[in-house]
Length: 426
Ligand code: CTP
Image (tube, rainbow, N blue to C red; front, top):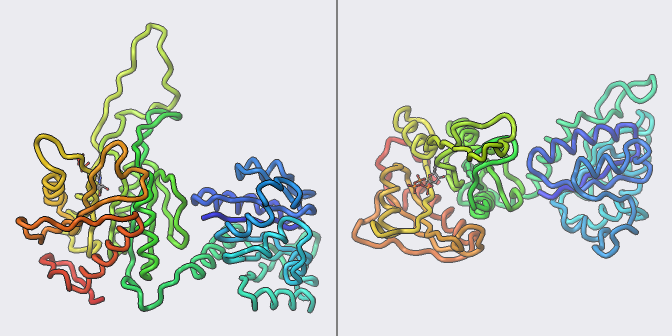
């Protein structure tokens, strides 16, 4: 998600640094927009270093990028913390003298304020009227926490803890973004999607990775959200933004992804394994950088097998009777002299034991990172004589097809599942 973090001029501005960290560590891209007054508490250099983006308080910097329009338009969420009495008043009145107030006026997505001020200021009818105005317009204004304030006084007016602002702001973004109501094909269901490519470290600076962009996984998460599902998104390395509205779990390696899947498996209805999981990892992860050797000899890297997470989850379900009702695997095949893409796909479906397998044909320029793709959805119940239909389209279209197929599996209209997994009606 693209987040604008507005910082108002109060002593609590320093706490916004922790909030920024929480957002970036959760995988969000954060543009900090401080007010001029706030830079007397925390300087621009701090925000630039922590966010990795240039920072300005005024509409007169980076004029060529039309920053004062662009930031508000592009933001999936605007969070103002701390929101001072002055800033709330300006936002309520629609004033636009600096970059932050301009951005607030240009906002297309949810706007969230975390106020911080002295108790008298918060309780003042002027501030209360401004808060009521902002809330009436759809902004979320948190109530301040109660506790020690800047001086010796204490009472309501303290900035809520960064963790609380983080959770409440993301919840506000989610509520705003999930369009499907009870009519969604997957409403009431939890869908866990793994996406992206795992990275297996060799040393602190090098890793073994793969070409997966995470586009298909992100499209699946978006399609599941659009069908009303609650979506857990287990993200390895991605080259696309994290879809708005998902519950994000970030991982790097196959072993971390395995742990996240195991954790999610007992409370999810559907598991879609679209991540490109490394089959092997270096046997050793050196604690320090591997250096060139003086004797000219080359290092030898030994690879060890990673567990097959998909097959393992299917097996756990069979052994315990608990786990996702529907497990969807992906296969990326090139075909070769010993078998066609379809033959390899069918063998993989059987070997992994999943309920559906999305079969992709891959090559150096096919599928990875591309917008359009061709897949076949295989099921163990397919007629082996019949060729499954090829679905061609954008990754978003393929994702929508997959959601329809998943919903059909739940409603039993596509086939009766023979396993012991209970399949609740639509
Ligand atoms: N997968 C997994 N754990 C692994 C490797 C793959 O869960 N260690 C999952 C992928 O997320 C995908 C499916 O298995 O859903 C197929 O992955 P793929 O790499 O195409 O197949 P492999 O099992 O690696 O088989 P092969 O390398 O022989 O093609």
